[in-house]
Every structure is written in C-alpha cells, then in structure tokens.
Image 1: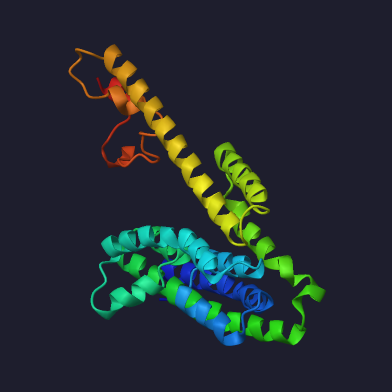
Image 2: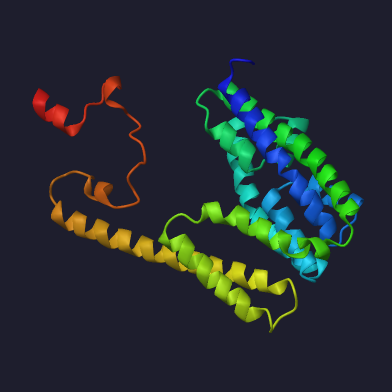
Length: 273
C-alpha cells in the first residue's frame, strides 16, 4: 500500500478536496440551512458542484424545487461516471451501492489514471471514501464555525456561494468555445433575473448551454462528414479505408501501438521497404 501510486494519489486528493468542505459548511448555514440540513445535504447528495448550486439558489431566495433542479442538472455527469466505473470495476453486492455513492470527479479521475486493474480499484475506493469522510467532517466544522459567526451578511457571506461556484467553474473554461458559451449563459441569466422567480435563471442558463452544445456538436459532425466525403472522393478506387483517418476529431489522442512494440511508423516502413 505504501508503494501504491493509486493510494498516494487518492490520499492526496482526499485531503485537498476534504479541506474544501469547510467552505461548503459555512456557506450552507449562511444560505439559511441549519446544521442538520447542511450535513444531510452533504452526506446524501455528496457531489460538490451540485451542493454549491443548491445552496446558491437557496441563498438567492429560490424555491427548494428550483434548487433541486439546478443540482440535478449538474449531477447528471455522475450517471455517466457510474456507467464507466461499473464497466471498469464491476462491483458486486453491497459494493455496488457504496460505489454509486462515492462515484465523483476525484474517485473516477484517480481510477482511470491507473493502468493496473488492482490499482484502479484501489485508487477509486481510497479517493472516494477518503473524500467522503473528510468532506463531511470538514463540512461539520465549517457549519459550526458559520453558526458562530452570526448574521452572514455582516461578513459578506451572503454572496460567497456564488463566488465559490464561479471558482469551481473557472478552471473548466479552456478554449474559446467554452468561454463563449459561458458568456452567453451569463448574459441569459442576467436577462432572466428580473423576469422569472429566484432559482429559475440558472435553469435558463443550463438550457441555453445545452442548446449551444448541441448546435456545436451538430456543426462539427456535419463538417467531419463533409471532410470525410471529400477525402473519400480523393481516394476512390484505391481499395483502402483510410479516407477518414485525417478527419479532425476522429484520430486517437495517443498512438495505441507505440513503435517499440513492433508497429513501425510510416517513415520506418518506408526505410524497411
């Protein structure tokens, strides 16, 4: 265990993520939840982005239904993670339920980052259970500290939930398209605020993001199909299926057959010929 790379990564991620639970606990009570409600939300929901979305809507005066809807939208990705981990780890019996509860960004990332199946399982469980224990422990610390602070508005904590959520979002904005979508969604939210009840603007932004993402995917698929068609015309009659290999987005990120294992690159094949 001491020499396990998955264990080292899992523990470090658990500690770093768990400490952040302090902020959720403090913001939970600042948004109007009491200690038992904050802890129940943390233990049962247990997915940071959805938790911050929930208390962000509640802090803004939104209804419980709107807060739950916003949290659910952000938690959809965990369903995809669950299918991936079920295929990768194949848990059985009660472990299936435990694995479902601790399937989060950190546990999935630790597992898929390993090559050995044993290390994959070890990384998943160490990261998942470690984050679960530490996150909830420090959530309790933050909630107790938040109660001791008194009125959150005098400390400026009434807007801290939104700031924390933006802090989670910012590192994910890589590339022009995600930034453009974020800007359009922010504009849609601002326009919707005076027109709809609290909590609904974030749902409007989610729908706008989904629409833009779908349109972008359809546009890229059409471009890829057009490129593949042109490449097919240029290679017609050659008897090969290599027309689509140059289409952007279809090539593998990594060469699955490195040269040292006997699969020579095109220049090496020419030299051998």
